[in-house]
Structure formats: C-alpha cells, structure tokens
Length: 473
Ligand code: ADP
Ligand code: MG
Image (cartoon, rainbow, N blue to C red; front, side, top):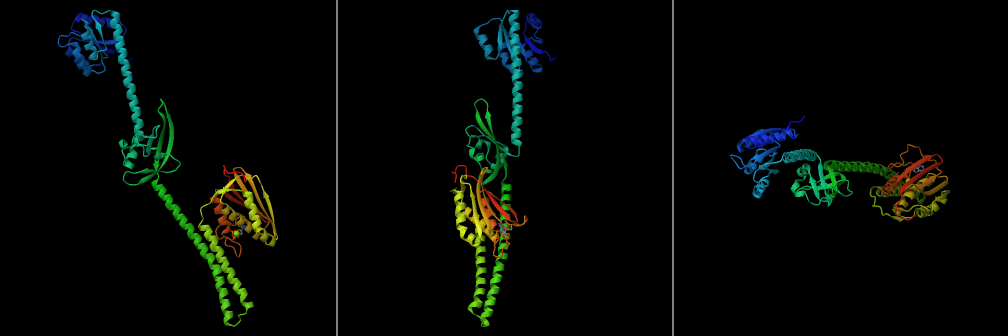
C-alpha cells in the first residue's frame, strides 16, 4: 500500500478548515490531511512534509494567500495549490493563476465542486510525477548509452541524413585533436564512406591515422532519414607492419631469385670459358683448322644464347609490365599460336589438334601476355615429346570461366616435381623460368592454372575469369 497523499489546508478559520477536511476525508480520495492557520505555518509544514495539494484561503492573518504561492512553490515545488476565495473578482482570479495556482474555488463551495477540484489537482500531480520519473529514466538511459559511446576505446561517429557529422566521440577528439564543437555539422562522408578498406583520418596539424570502419545504416523514426553509424579502429601501425613485412618478403624473394640466377648463369659461363680455353690451346698448338675450331665456337655460341635466354626470361619475370587489357577472342588466339608453332611441330613429328568452342565467352585480357603463356606451354609440350606425339589445344567455357587445355602425349613428370618453381628445369638448355612466368601472367589476369601429369598424358589447364560485358569471341 502506498502512503496516503498529503493535503494541506491553509485557513485561519477553524470551523471552515474542519469542514473542508471532513469533506475531503469523506470523498474517498485516500488522503492524509494536515492544517495550518497562517502563511508562516503553511510554509514550515510544506518544507518538512510531503504534500501533493494545498488548499489555501486567500485571506490569511499574516500574508495575502496569493503572494504566499510563490514562497510555497519554493518550499515544495511538487505541491499543487488551489485557492479558496470569498470574493471572486477578476483581479484575484488572474493574480492566483498568474502565481501558479492550479484552480480557485468560490466560498461558499459545493461539496461536489471541492471534491472534483481536489481530484483533478491530485491527478495533475500524479501525472507530473510520472512525467518526471519517465524523464529521469530517459536521461539515465541516454547517459548510459552516451557513456558507452564515450568510454569505448574506438572511434565512433554518426552522419545524419545529409552526411553531416552528428556524433563525434571522445576517442575521436583525443586522437584527432578536433573537438566535438568543431566537428558536429561538418561534412563527414569522406571520412567513413567509399570502397577503401582503410580510410584516412586527418589529425589536426600533423598528418593522419589509418582507420578501418564498420558502418551501419539506420533508418530513424519520425522522418529523420537514414543515419550512418560508424565504429572505427586505428590500424595505422598494423598497416605499417604489413607494409614492412611485404617489403621484407619481396626482398627475400628477390634475393632467392638473384641467387638462383647467379647459379644458373655460372653453368653456361663456366662451360663457355672451358671451351674458350680449348680453343686457345688448339690455336697455340697450331691445331687451328676450321674443322677443329668450329664445333668449339658453336658450343660457346650455344652457351651464350643460353645466357641470353636466361636474362630475357628473368627480365620478363622480375619486370612484369602492367597488363594491357582488351576484349579478345580466345579461339582466334589459340589458332594463331598453333599456326606459329606449326613448322617446329611438323619438324618434330608432333601432330597438332584443336578443339575450340567457337561460342567462347568474351575475355578481357592482355593478348600479348596470353600468347606468351600459350607459347610457353606449347613449347614445353613439344619438348616433352622428342620422338613425336600429339599436342592438343582445347578452349571451352565453364561457369564464369574460360578454360584452356594444353595437352601432350609425352612422358610427363612426377607429381612432386616443382615445375612452377623458378629455375626448376630438367632440360640441358632450360632456364626453368617458363612456367614461373606462365603462373605469374595467369595470376595477373585473376586466373589459376592446374596440371595433371602421368606417362603419356600431361595436361595444363588455365582458368580465366570471363568479362561480364565483353562479347563472345
Ligand atoms: P624449362 O622449359 O626452361 O625447363 P619451364 O618452367 O617451362 O622451364 O618448365 C620446368 C620443367 O617442368 C621442365 O624442365 C620440365 O621438367 C617440366 N615440364 C614442363 N612442362 C612439361 C610437360 N608438358 N611435360 C613434362 N614435363 C614438363
Ligand atoms: Mg619451358
């Protein structure tokens, strides 16, 4: 049971006060009633107790009841006052209401009038109290959320429907040096939107931080439009680290390559040097006939061409040019590669076969580089069939890809042979860079390459993504 609500009757007329109290008690309002005979007593009671309603006689011995209203509000802001007056002039009514009285009652009053007014006044107080409670709760909850946003060790900002900054949390203030007052209302779309994985956050007077944002679009009620909320993490040092690691990895890769190259260069160099020594010896011994010198010179020349190939391949590998992408017809490219190697093939007794799907999806690719890929694979295939065989070039479409097979009937290689590794070669004249370059170019096109090999059948398959807009070729 809640405590009964307090009503203070302020009247110097004992009989009247008694009468009023009785009416209220009998009215089923469930109230506790106290009385004060003077203005001063009324203020003292209001200050020490809790009253919802004060019924105040306008004429009091020590003070005018209307003037008393102001002091009463100060003493007990939650108490509603109803004035009781014997002479209802317009002036007294206006004065009472201006001073904040809830209502006034004319003497002599009817019981029903008094009860009705008291009931309405009490309802008003209850309503006001509920409003204040809700307001307080709202403020608490708002403060709680605000504190979460502020205390979070992350950047939190909001953009209103116009893309202006509507929230700029403490972390943002601390790190950027720009205060909330500076930033609220500023355009903020560039700070968090766009496709970039990482955004630049300008720092007042000194550079920037790199921030990764998570965003949420929130449709607000009451026509406030869609707001963007963004939570950001500072990834500046992470990005730094990544860059350093990548650079270190690249350096290591270049080092490995250079070591491989040096190793590869040494063989033909040595062999050319030996041959030259032979040449010199024969010259010194007077054995220098065309017949005895030519084979030696030819060997030297071979080694030099090998060196040349090595350098060319190596350059192709380490200095990849940017791709020159254009819409291209795959079947046509395959045919031109076959035509190009036809003389070598027939000399090596290799039969060429083509199975080209004429309805191939359009490709956006660098034709020169793709040609280089196919030539490398076709040459390897022919070199794998020294005694002749069949080389088949297939092109077909598959789900979102174009697929190209280069298949031969040679001896093949063991599963574990690292054929795509730089400098891996089983050929006396090989550089071991052909497939490395193939792999690189295919990857540059966003494609992949796969190989299956067993004795009698080796098949390299290239998967290239299909350009969605290009026409079939
Ligand atoms: P290279 O042709 O200079 O040796 P590649 O990178 O083109 O260098 O090939 C590396 C190695 O992979 C070859 O030496 C060979 O051993 C193996 N290889 C490549 N293609 C084939 C193939 N079609 N059949 C059998 N072995 C192959
Ligand atoms: Mg090769």
